[in-house]
Structure formats: structure tokens, C-alpha cells
Amino acid sequence: MPEPHSALHLSVALDGSGWHPAAWREHDARPEALFTARYWADLVAEAERGLLDLVTVEDSLSLQSAHPTEPDERTDQVRGRLDAVLIAARIAPLTRNIGLIPTAVVTHTEPFHLSKAIATLDFVSNGRAGIRVKVSGRADETAHFGRRPLPQLRLGELDSPAGRELLRDLLAEAEDYVEVLRRLWDSWEDDAEIRDIATGRFIDRGKLHYIDFEGSRFSVRGPSITPRPPQGRPVVAALAHRGEPYRLVGRSADLGFVTPRDTGEARSIVAEIRDAQAAAGRTEETVHIFGDLVVFLDGDPGAAADRRARLDQRAGGPYTSDAHVFTGTPAELADLLQEWQQAGLAGFRLRPGTIPHDLEQITRRLVPELQRRSVFRTAYEATTLRGLLGLPRPANRYATSAAGALA
Image 1 (tube, rainbow, N blue to C red):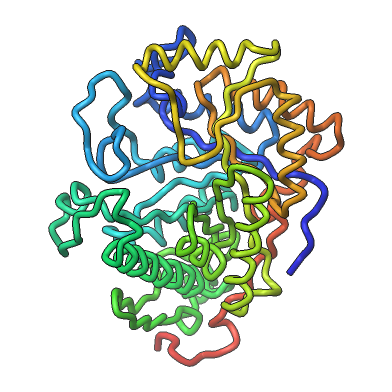
Image 2 (cartoon, rainbow, N blue to C red):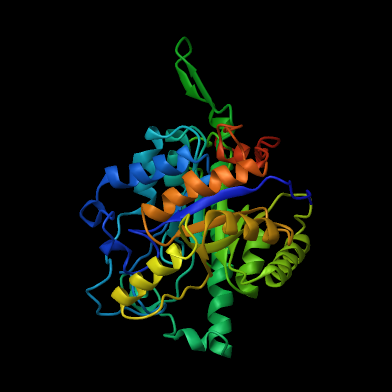
């Protein structure tokens, strides 16, 4: 597999007013604008000014909650979201270079619908689309659909036999889902559209293909109703915290987000994903691994810690996260990113503790610091997300054979 480059990839994860639950109460927050297109356009424009590789947009099928596996009744934290895929589609024409990766829960949705939504996003963004696939075993989300029963497990029960079985089933379903997405994106050959006015032929039907996917969870015939996307296949990403999701990244993703706590753990996670990648026969493919960190940044030493303490007081308790929480200066964060890069991480996805403050600290203070160290770009060098990430445009699996083509 390709060796990591000395330059860092850098991205941000956007969620509401920021990742701290009291962020919406900061003086520069815009809680009244959270459900407007302008709000999200402004955030992504700031990320693009910082030359970041991509932004991700969080989503779920239930209201946000202080509990990871069940709803709460809190009214002092942001609740409610706009649809992440539709946000990305709205802001795509307003940006030029930055990658757009919305989140989609694949447990209760159909791959045919999502495939054409992300293909459409790739068209309207001129090749900058991706998708972060997310699984869900939450009972409240299952109840919205009523299609199948799922065992009701709390977070502490994930390591029980029932918890491990549920997680394996959800992730196996996600692997099939990603396979269907990619087959549907390939179901139109690149030159299937003829658009010949003289002969009256708009498409060559011999270059549209049934995918005929038969699995234990999906049966999808195809082809898609949307032509092959500009990138061929948009970038597929996944967040992983433990062994089973690490295998999903290694077997199926182009990009994995992981949550190490230190350099040693980062090195161990990278090794586990690389083993899964090799076992899946993907050794020659590039699978990027980004480290996730929540960040509270200020230029003056101690200022970030004071601000975080104030936010904790407003929230009624100390902030904790599934990811490492960094509090300090942009220069100190740059030191940490370079240290963790040596463990094999290709880049990082930073979660701003508050927005806009920490987002602007990333784009206006951290990025210049990384540029001074010659480890981050000074201009966009590609116009597609695959280009920014150094991923080749994949060949169409159906282009060399007419078998299964539409008559």
C-alpha cells in the first residue's frame, strides 16, 4: 500500500454550534441561524478559505442526546438537525474546491436512494462528494421505521455476546450497502450518454448495466437512474472506535476516522486497519486514516482552558468525548498532529469545540502554523475530492463486458 506523504490532510467535522453542548450559548454563536442555508454556507466557506481537504456534516435519525444509545429530555442543549445530504447539495454550488461528506445512517435507509443522492451531489459539486456511512442500533431510531426488531442494548452491553452479534450484523449490512452504492455508481459506463441530435439517441442502452446484487439484506437489480458520477465513485468514509468498525474501514472505506488517545494507540489502530485491508485483498489501494480530535484553541496560553471551564460550568459538568479532547494553542496542536502523523495517520478531522471561534482558530491560526512548517498546502492542487486525497478515479467494473447490459 502507498507510503504516507509528509504533508498532512486536514478536515473539520461540523455539528450545530460546535461539539461542546454549551457552545450555542457563546456570544459569537448564531443559534437563531442553525436551520438556515446561510449558516452552513458560511461555515463551509470558512473551511475552504483555510484550504481544508473536506468537511463532514453530522446527521442522525433521532434527536441529539446526552446518552449515546437513547434519547434524553434535556432542553438546555441543541436539539434538531437539517438533513446532511441536502445541506451539502445546497452549499456545493457556493464552493469550488473543498470536499463535502455528509453523514447518512445506512441501517434504516435504502442504498438505491442514497446512491443517486450522492451521485447528484457529485454532479452539482463537480466531483467533490463523499458519504460517511453510519450504523445505528438505537431503539428510538428503529421505532421510526418499524421494519425490523433490533435488541435494545445500552452502551455498556456492546461487549456482551448479544452486543457483539448486533454490531457484527450492523457492520456486515453496512459492507453490503457500500458494495451496492459502488455497483450502482458503476452501472452507467462513462460514455453511456450519446446526446446525438442527428440520430435521436440520447443514451447507449448497451452501456447501462444491471448490478443484480443478491445479499442477505439487500436485493438490488439496478441500474441507477443517475449517470456515473464525475469521480466515478464518490469517496466512502466511516468512523471507527473498535475492532469491528476497524474492519469495515479496512474492507470497504476509502477514508476512516479513528479516535486514538495517544501515539501508541494511533499506531495500534493503524496496524489493525491495515491488517483488515490486506485480508480483504486491498493492499494496493489507498485507504486514508484520519485521527479525530475535539479542539478548544486560543493563541494565549491558558485562554482555551479558561473558555472550556466556562463552557463546562454552563453545561453543568465537564465535557467528555469519544475522541481525544485537545485544549491549548494552535502551535501546540500542530506539535501533536505531527507527532501522531508519525504513527501512520494520513491526516486529521478536527471537531471545533465552539463555532465560529474554534473553526476560525483552525483556519486562521493552525493552518498558517502548519504551512510555516511546510506540512500543509498553500493552495488547492486539485478540483475533485479524490484528487485532493490522492485517490485515483476507479475504472468502471462493467465497462469491459456487455454481460448483463440492458437490451
